[in-house]
Length: 193
Image: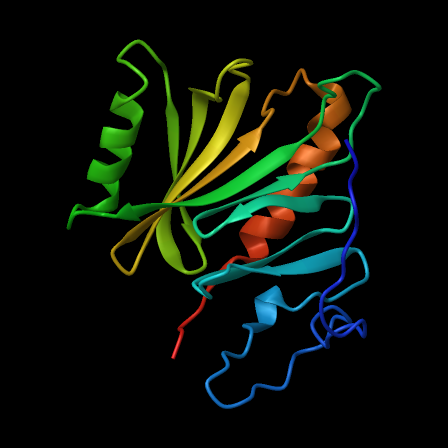
């Protein structure tokens, strides 16, 4: 099996990659200030449909990017096949069905079963109402503890998942807290013309 690195297009860095605000052209959306990388230690990510943008630590890589999902992977912290690492996922779940945030979160938690103790904290992401959830397990097979946020904006449900969220997962704890702080403070919704 072979892999190749292919570059398509201009090899010069864009203004956004340099940490500067891009000059908007006709029909192009200008990035909100919170999304423009302010130091070399942060990168900017703009969702493919232009619905949101964010900054993330440059020690993380963006991967598995689809129209409705992106994963940000922290550096591997051991040499194993499945290394310990912080991973933050941002996904668009779809329309809110006209439900308020509390009902959307109730429905989401109910999909896990009734025997979980969940800590629900009101929050805001990108100026939109959100709830941060502690106590939900992650995806199969590991089912690691998570910190999750459910965000409602413009009739759409956004879902952010951070793993592992475990104060006992000391090797990844610094990366976990760093990526959550950078992403949650920079996350912004965009208006596409």
